[in-house]
Amino acid sequence: MKKTSKKLLFIVLSIFFVITCGIYAIVITNSARPQTPVNNHLAANNLVRISTSTTEASKKPTVIKAAEFISITAPVSSSKRLLGSKLGPAALYMPEVEALKMLGEPKQRSITHGIGTPEWEYANGLTVAIAGSPKSKYPDAIWKIIATAPSGASTSEGFSLGDSASDFKRIYQNFDLIECAFQCEGYQLGIKDSSGKFLNAVFDDNKKATIIVLSNEILE
Image (cartoon, rainbow, N blue to C red):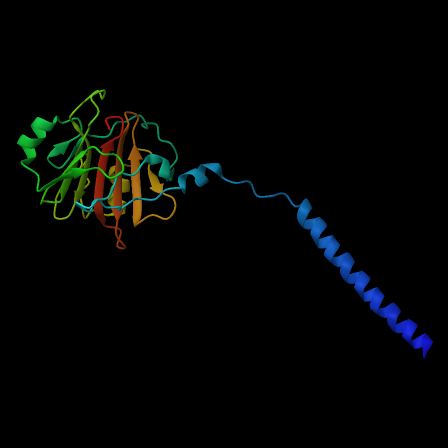
């Protein structure tokens, strides 16, 4: 009986020893395995998404910054090419007085969410933001233009609301294209040129443009 008990104890201890060695080997292997490096570029671009935060006065999308996007094309030789300044009848750098003459009195006056610069909303779907800093190179001038339906606004290069993502890539094939990387509201493509102008298009599920934003944050 004692021999049987000793034999059984020996078997149990042997099994326990084998299991312990196996667990130890797994831990050692995993700790020795090289860790996948964090892509800091992507991590930085994934921090922020397009905002549709609203003020009490109105609902308007805020401008997207290029830091929220990643490049989707190889750099092109004409990467220093500049974007046009027009979106519909409005244009970046257009003085406030001239904007009123061109666009008329806005349906609603408010401020840019999170920034505080004056913002004018028109019944035709166009919204413009006016630079508020007297230190700006273009004080009291348009620094951001937003086009939504029913506006038929087009960019200087000919991209319009309702156009497809493929149209955007074709029209801007000579620019370095970027796209929203993470947690974006809709598929988004963009371009930022060397002068600071930033063009952003937001597309619906059918890849048709529903929002176009043209801005120059240097003027902000």
